[in-house]
Image (cartoon, rainbow, N blue to C red; front, side):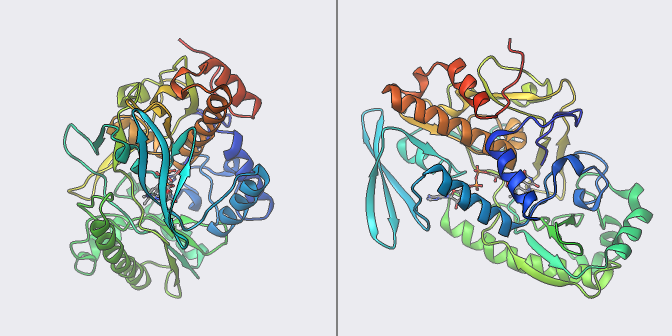
Length: 398
Ligand SMILES: Cc1cc2nc3c(=O)[nH]c(=O)nc-3n(C[C@H](O)[C@H](O)[C@H](O)COP(=O)(O)OP(=O)(O)OC[C@H]3O[C@@H](n4cnc5c(N)ncnc54)[C@H](O)[C@@H]3O)c2cc1C
């Protein structure tokens, strides 16, 4: 999703994210977000909410991501699972991990939880809410897939013809789903979003929809994965049979892992709310600025809610949202930061999660160097350091 401000004028999620994008673009593995606009195939033909998104190829992300990690000097352990924490009072002294070597412990001055699900924080006893505490909604899971071999001229012409029918949650092919309802069956989604990939004729499709999944449970993850595989085949068959331009398409791949939109939201020193996102509130301790949409998918029906922040150039995420209550040497980055479910639906996007990662990593390094807790850090110094790294943290604060 977007890394630009609400006016689509300037890139506001920069730093590591911008470097990653630039380097992917350079090897032909991504499209520069400045060239992407609503209604293009890259935007799945949507009229709103998809300006300046960054289409990228997974291979490019893996390659450049690895290169950047190597260059940074980070020590990396792949295929390694976090299992548990070792605690001393309010400190995590080490994490227990499992991998090919068996079980082992990594000790650390400061731990950063980027599991998406706040697994480390939860094990350490940090409080959290699952999904939306107001209505119990937990956003559905989706299995992504990539399809190739589509005839772009035919697909584009068909979309132009039906453009007036496209709206959030009843987007592309909602008209075919209505016409061929028997073939679509009781599938819990009313559209087939087709985001054009970097390679012409290829699309990423994210509209499988698996309900009632608690992705902090292994059984649910397994069930979601198995249902997701079947749903992808179902969507592919439907497109091939009914969607002009997909007659000769082939299914390239389903995702390596089931896509999870929402699980835990940790209790942090500050809780960002949907109202603040809508108001484009600027915080004095902002470590990231963004203009991503509030995008919640309902767990019961094909719909959801989709709001675009408009009341300012961007909203901000305070550093305090990354600082969990109760554990003194832990930071949380990614979609699990301290936010209510509506704010969580806006901050969960990839560019913003990368900005939180950069802020958490920088804060952890600074706190470790000073032998202080992340909570005690001089936030203005952190913001200054992020700006020196090329990140944007906003120009005003109240
Ligand atoms: C279907 C779908 C469509 C989406 N579409 C878009 C989109 O178009 N644009 C956009 O910007 N965003 C999109 N998002 C949102 C975005 O992809 C995620 O919210 C975002 O990637 C979350 O980042 P994260 O760093 O919090 O977690 P993740 O990117 O999920 O990273 C968490 C990592 O931690 C690892 N991990 C988890 N638990 C453990 C453990 N116990 N031990 C070791 N490792 C562990 C995981 O394997 C994973 O690698 C979409 C999400 C979904 C599900």
